[in-house]
Image (cartoon, rainbow, N blue to C red; front, side, top):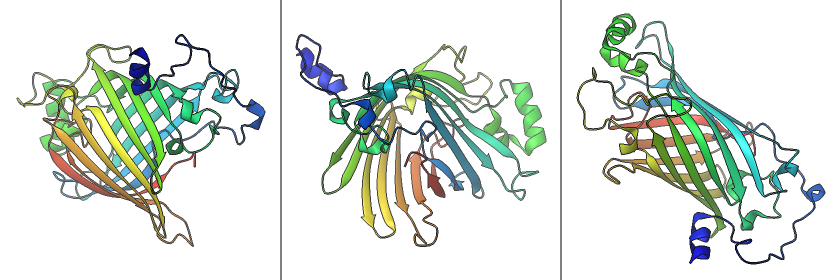
Length: 316
C-alpha cells in the first residue's frame, strides 16, 4: 500500500525495503549540460485586453531560474535532483490615451525556491533537454505579490485622485501572500509529444516573506471572494506539441481554489505558431482566458482576457 501511494505522488519507491539494481550513467556522458540561466515560465511580450479595460495594454513577462549547487550535485545526476531559485515578474504599460503619462504597472512579483526531483522515467536522460520532455516533480516555497503600496483608505483615495479615478486605483491595491507549492509534470508520447501538469498551492496566512497575507482590507467594498484560495490553489494543464507547418502546439488550463472546490473556476487556452518561420522563426502565442485572477490586484474579479504575444523559452 505504501508503494502505491508513493508512486501516485511521484516519489521513488526504491530504498523502501528493497535493493535497487539501477546503474546510473556516468556524468561525463550527460551532454549537453543543463542551461544554467534559463526560463522558469515562458518570457512574453505582447498585447493583452481585459474585459473591464477600455483597450489593450502592453504585457511583459520576464521569468528566470538558476540551479543551486550545480557542480556539487554533478549537474543533478548525483541524486536525480536539483534545487532552483526562480523569479517571475509581470509588467503592463498602458497607452497615454487611457491612462495619464502611459504608466508601467507591476502586475506580478514571484520569487520561488524549489527542489526538482527527476523521476525514474527521466533517470539517464539528458537533464539539459526541454522541461516538457521530462518527468519530474517540484516541491517549493514561494512568495507572490503585485509589488504595490495601497493598504489604507486614505492612500487609496489619494492614489485615485492622482491616477485618474477609483477604477484605475484598483491596480495599486497591495496584494501578497506566501505559499507552499507542489507540481507534478508527466511527459508521454501518444500520437505525438504530450505533457500534463498537476500543481497544488497552499497559501499561508503568515509567511517568511509576507508577514500577514494581504487578500482583503476592511475598507474595500464587500465581496464574496476575499481569499486567493477560493479561486486558486489547484491547477491542471494539458499540452500537445505539433509540427504542422506554422502551427506548433496547444495547451489547456483549468484552475480552481481548494476552498469551495470547483465553485470559482478559470479556463484558459493557448495556441502556439510561428508565422514567417522561414524569415524570423518568431514564436507567437494566441491565448484566451475566462474566470478569475486575471491579475493579482483584482484576483476576485470575474472577467475574460485575450492576448497575442511573442513567447520565448531560453532552455529550448
